[in-house]
Structures are given as structure tokens and as C-alpha cells.
Length: 252
Image (cartoon, rainbow, N blue to C red):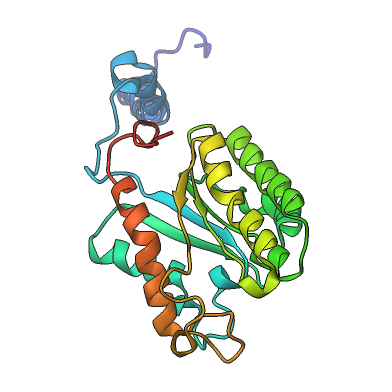
């Protein structure tokens, strides 16, 4: 009898017929495992489902952009400078804000213009501008200092129009000459008014000229002096650290 006409044994037929399902089922299971996540993501209802919220407000940023007063020149610990004291107050009240100290000793208003882009690499919600003291002590023209400060303000606003700007007022000692001291003092309220910024009238109020609150150079505050400077800033800054939109808080 030829092989074509030969009947297969029953046991062989059963084995062959049951082999393919056993091979196919694992393959189908593997396909479902690989494909099912993509099918799940393609479901519009699933894709549109919002991520669960932690319920905590996003942390905002206060950036202090200044000279050696901001940097804490002469202090054993720069955290004792007034920006660090502000961070302590923020942390004590558990407010959703952080402080960045972008102070640089010896900085002039012209230097501030040059390094501003570096400071604005991160988002800034409140920008505290503390510059000009070194311009005054060097006897530079008040008009030049004012123009540089205006350039800084313009570029901060161009980067983010919603950024709130605080301007720290500075004053020169009378030995610089009465006319010069008056012209220099007038820079800060004029800039605040022109730009609808918020003015800290005199950053060193209660500290400037007091030997007990300044280092031997007579210019830079001691830790105790910086604590008073922080209070000068905090009185103006604290009302702005609310959860409402900052743009609604700014006053002309």
C-alpha cells in the first residue's frame, strides 16, 4: 500500500491537531501584552484623564539682584545677609516661595546690565532690584545709573511681563555733596513711578551710618544690621506673597 493511501494512526492525528492550539495560545497572549498598553493610551477618555493633584500650590521665586549688600559681603555665612533672612521668614510661615540670592560684590548698574541674562535663566515671579550703591560711591553720573537701571527693568519685563519688580532705594552720604546726594536719591522713586514698580524707600533705613550695625568699613551691615534690612524689605514684600495672581497686586 502506498504512503498516500495509508491511514494515519489515530494517536498521531490527535497529537497533531492539539499541537497548533497549544503553540498559538502563548503567541496570542504575548501579542495582547505588547499591544494592550497602546490600545489603552489611544482611548480618548483615558488620555484626557487629568493627573491627580497634590493640592499644594506651585512654588514661586523671589530673585534678589544686587551688589555686595545682597551678597552679604563680610559675613561669615552669606545666609545671614538679608535675602537669607527673608527665606527664613518665608519658611517660618510655610509660604510657597523660594529665594534666589543673585548678589555680586562690587557690582555696578552697568555690570548688572551685562549679567542680567544669566540671572533670568530661571522663571522669576518677583524681581528685587538692589543696585546703584557702587555707582554712587564711585561718583558716577546719576543719569547713567538711572539709564542702566531702566534697561534692567525693561529686559525683565520683556522676559516676562507678569514679573513683579521691587526697587530698593539707595542714598549717598552727604560728604558726596548735597546736589549729588539729592540727584542720586531721586533715581529710585522716579523709576518706581515710571514703571509701576514697588519701592522700598531706603534699603538701609535704621542701619546706614550706625557704626554698631556696620562692619569696620562703615558700608556693609553686620548680621544684626542685615536683620534690620530684612525687616525693611519684608514690610514691603510680605503682602505680595499671597496666593492671588501677582499682577492684581501691583500698584502704580
